[in-house]
Amino acid sequence: MSTFIKTSEKINEIILITECEDGSPHIAPFGIRERDGLVLIAPYRPSTSLDNLLSGRRVTINTTDDVRIFAGALTGRRNWQVVDEGDALVLESTLTYQPLKLEKFEEDTLRPLLYFNVLKEVNLKPFQGYNRAQASVLELCVLVSRLHMLPIEKIVSEMDYLQIAIEKTAGYKELEAWSWLVEAIESHRANLSGDNFA
Image: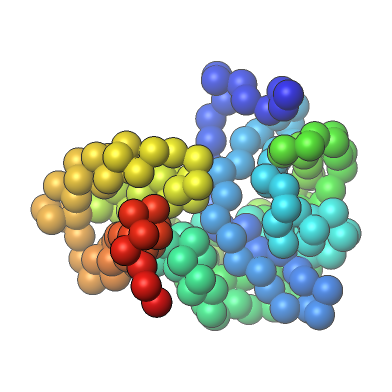
């Protein structure tokens, strides 16, 4: 049984870029925590991110207000522009980035715990704040990442509620991100019902 969850810990949603064996970047959304002065990352097994994190190759936290990158990474759209800064792999749209170094590893059959030191923090652009549509996209991203774990009825009910903020405050980036996530949910629902004949 994993001892990962501590309800009092804050979770920050970021884009994690890890370096693959061939040097290419792997882009994935993650919720990260701070614990005992270190960054805690706990990927589910199995995952490309976990393999890369354990390899000793480059790992970079990226913060961005382009929610398409979160939605895109979850729906197979990972072809975002990445700049190689030597010690870090940085999204073209990054606001801040932090290269990391693995300090401690705790084994777990479901979610190993990996603790990292932040080597430096670089601020590139000011953060203007999230609108409600961006927050709704991020919430739906979390639900899509758990399609295999949650009842489809719960996901659809949450999506319907989040849709209100999309209709009121979304720009073109949020609308595009939202459409990708809805497509993933509808495809999952079709698979469950046996209606997907492709």
